[in-house]
Length: 519
Image (cartoon, rainbow, N blue to C red; front, top):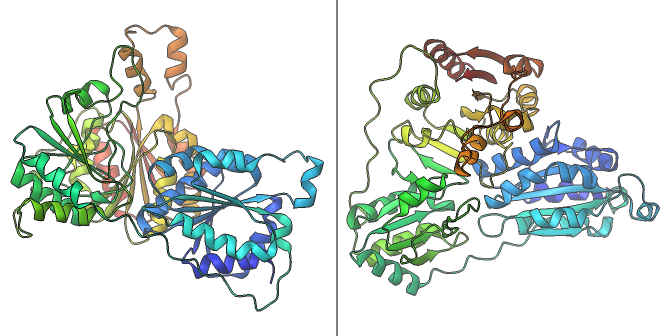
């Protein structure tokens, strides 16, 4: 047994049985160890942003960490954008980053870098393994760190000589200690939240994190029905359980004007696993904190606490019975578009109406899919995963990881065309693993969100230079050929009729399929 074998055994002993990988020379001993251990599922990504994004999607649905295997500092750097998103989502993840042999670092070989400095901004825990004898304990510590709270990003740096160093054949895997227990819910916080909701003033309850699962949502719905408090989710959420049989909750808007309008007049803001809402960006003359200056904030529970317990205690404090009625989803749509030119509204309405039960929707539609959360409140019960950190290029990898975690469920990526290009290689992984992913590319051939940002800056007429930086034409992207080149069947549609037919076909088949919806 060598250090790499011990690392693999320790990961498996702690329930980490999936590894998303893009290895290089310094990781070959760990690759060999993974090859000897058939209980570990290894999934290759052709770009490190696919690897880290897929590990994020996997953990959001599996509720446990996956491992990633990345090649030295540059490989880690390629995956940092989606590690940023995962960190914002409180996703549990264990990154194994290969490193030169310890004695080789002094020679400053071309791929030598400061891995710790690259890892720290996007990781909660970083450690360099000191040698083969410590690899197992280091791996167990990494898993424990990843399981703290809702989840954390742990990055273990594995020098090549620590991987190939020999250990006694009977060396046992190291079982990680249990993560720290969450901080208890404060009775004072519960009483303060109840007082805010009894105040008679306009109130809003903002939910985030694990409060968006079915059980806590049901409690929040009973509280809203009894008190009249407005329920909203944070703008960007790790995972929400939604649909006709679940409590409907509006999403707090992304556009600054709509966000300010949504919270205008609110005097009491109760936060449950959520942060005080802030603008995504600064704008001249506009506020950064979005709640009105005279709005009182009350923190019922922070994201790492037991949010279900916090809501149940709040309901008890308010005298709301467990069988009290909650909020009901709106009636499903009965009139659907049947013909005409395709637009984003038609795509959203048709998908919402035909969403399969227990589907997983990974939404990186950016501007063109903003109506979908409202349209799908009455859809069949489903899970809804979002871009959490604002760093685009996660949608296709997120769907890939979710499909690995949940092989019996249809995964649908509602995807903007520009951001899909950041990690289009995920389609190849979907084809190779035969993942049941339906990708809908909303092809407006533009960075429409940036067109909107230009307007918010007061620019109403774009010149040639601005258009050349914000439009995706000359040439237009051809998603049918891009997908087929990576082994995914694809079709292009630009009418309602054609899209409806393609959607039905994509939902009926097993395996990856892509629809380019030209809107």
